Length: 178
Image 1 (cartoon, rainbow, N blue to C red):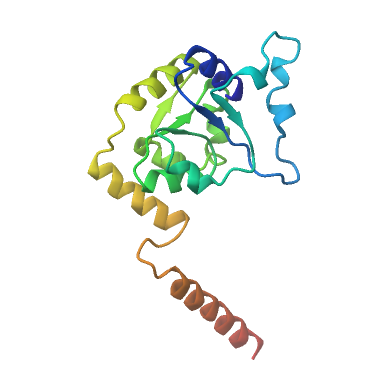
Image 2: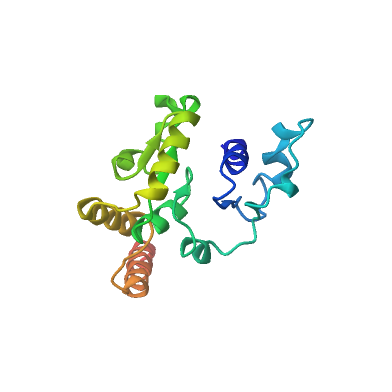
């Protein structure tokens, strides 16, 4: 998918493309690994002015500057979805297998997002969403519910809920020990 966006940036120089890999963590792919398929090609990443690849960017700042978000298996999708951004999930052939369904985050809620089944569809959906970003209010309600299920309450009462949950776990454990 990263390679797709490099080529997308080349084809659409008027569109800024930002690739934000996960921050440096053990096991997370580095920029060099992500772009390994370009090795030996004539493409020089540094010379593509509308392409940024950085893991140190603030995700939330990016949301306020972006028009479309594309990703897979990250809570960032829900964060962007709840503020009304178009979300595109690349559900390509290599992950369209039932054995992966339990490993794919939000698989049961894919109807709340745009799904691209191959690179051609991905390009089509990205360009469409750049000009048509509105998300239906019914979809937005379901996105908010999904966010609350997997991330946090939108009512500003998350801390109180976490404190209550921790207290209930502690109470149950202390009753077991008695």
